[in-house]
Image: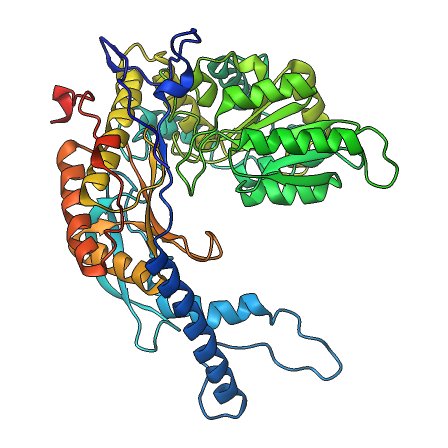
Length: 530
């Protein structure tokens, strides 16, 4: 449920994001606002009914395909005598008979830089989304789907110029791993800059964000260890936890009370069968959740870490660059010393408009990963132009370019996130997440409405991302908007107008919460944005 509104502190630069002073009169909770409105009963009923009908008609189609009464538009697995099916499963059934019907809402080809506006290549299907063909037409639309939080996804400016220079100097690829003549001066500069930016002793960077989690978690924990993982953690964390061999226990999303309960229970009972104490306990959490738009209550997690002598692994894929008065993530947002976090992980694919990931912490931790990380030893190093894009954008964020452009973008992102979220609440739709999060989920629920919303917004000039089961709970299908510092007030107003228009068509004005909970009138728009 929504939490009551309290005034926002200001500075001469605008709204102060995340500088929470720990005093008796005021704590971080007083300025921490999240909303997770319950699913309306009628929406839940219609959603369940829709999936039941889709499953029934899917089985009828399969019977028709089996007896040759209907031709399958997609190759199914051939039957081989004596062999069990290799990939036929419920997932395959779901893809053919549920996802396929609305597949035009995903995988849309892009024909331009993914900035505040984007070119979508129009495509059509003449066989109910089994196959697509391009029409040759480009749709120039507003982009509220890319993770371009600070607006560095652009094809001009200082970052692009630096990338061009390094491409001419070093080429596009190294064709070697970090330990086999692949580690260049630019990679050393990037590692040191990341550590400096985060305020930690050392950092190591990797060419792939997903592998940063999946290949490094097994280096930190193994059999005899315990991982306490948020139940909404990213698939890369889930895979890394499985590969580690450690026991994995799940706690409710961002729920410190449930986490403490699981910690107590695990410490009391110890390892399964042997009852021996755990070799180590690792709490794995995310700064901003990419589907819920929620922000981790980090002060509560740190208290539990100290109380129960556990380690914290913090994934800042979406929060680094997007949270805090200096863009340094969730620790910066709450005013917490980053050294309180044992393993700091993040990616460069969002705020830095590049690719890859990093892990930062103590020198001993990073030296250990340099030797034992599969993602470091067995993969090629990051491409020099990719590394240069990160360096150039990070220096702007840190103010090392001699301008205030980085700080302006950080402030603008906060203002845009609050402004856009407030506008959605005014429309009367159900919106999840924290008011300071640039990830803004709008709940749609029904699978048919998900596709209709996507098609109608694109038709009117707005590119959005829609998400359904299994990426969300069955009855929590949604549109996920990503706000950027590159969005102007006019762009957001136009997007909100289009969303309000489509909301009437799709009939998703389900919210019953009072507007006063979210009407943050003390967030001004700076002159340069209007």
